[in-house]
Image (cartoon, rainbow, N blue to C red; front, side, top):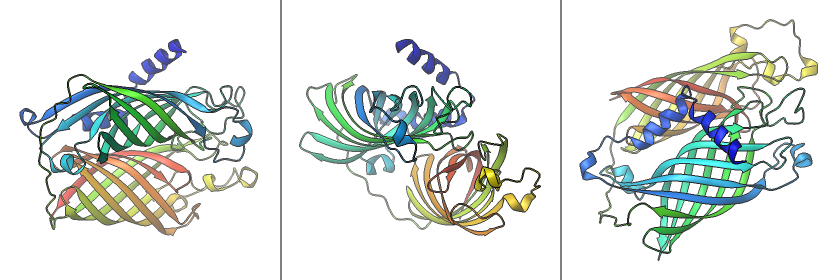
Length: 383
């Protein structure tokens, strides 16, 4: 297994074309505040996890024969910086992690791997106990994807490469100046965003136990809590994004999808904003994605209007320095091809590249199935 782990890590680390992974790493380890005025502490964390595969698709329950188990290794950084968002979040840990897990049936689903940046935000402290919650987003790898001749029963992963999302609740307790014991309850998701079919994705729920070793004594500076002054700033954000997806297992054609989005934001503080927007979406998977194989007309011709959707959106943005995390809920208001559901969701990251120019990464989904992963550029105009 060690050789396999080394091989997979090597493959993941050589994927320099993966804009998402390196964009988020740059985000979490960059800072626009004065380095000399900040105190930074590093630690190494290792945990063993054990849990279940959540069988959200009917035939998964039939094939799953074992629990999910594996390890997580994280390099943590905690920085006592001068930015308000750091103070409001309890001076969170950020870092890079590696996740490995069995997936319930080695011959069909194989094993899952992921490399990801993350943020562990402070919840509360009770005595020596510290509680945090984690959000992680990175690159996943499934070593036994669907194959029409060798692995026909795997309708969960259609590709080796996937997006990884991890959510967790942490509880830590110090046992020495440099060692904390840590237990977590986590949910992990891997999906390729329908870039290849099949793609039902996979979810695990697990509990883990491990330890954190601090590279220096936890001599944290004494800091005063900062308040977030309310502001009345308004902003218009425009983004142009594109991605590729496979509409159905057959025919196995790959289609271009994308969106042009305009959002008007009202800032509550410098770190929090809410907005309303307008979406113009080209979903290259339509209409094949919504038609059963036995009902498909392979001689049918489709035009631009068959792929085009217009939606209205509501958005919440959280700003972490030069980075914005957003979650969006939308409703279709105009279309020719009826969507799976009348509502949809987006989750993603925007990173300031230069002044008001933004890099953008997001996942477009219909709440139950990811439709495509999109990359793009955007521009902010504040007034």
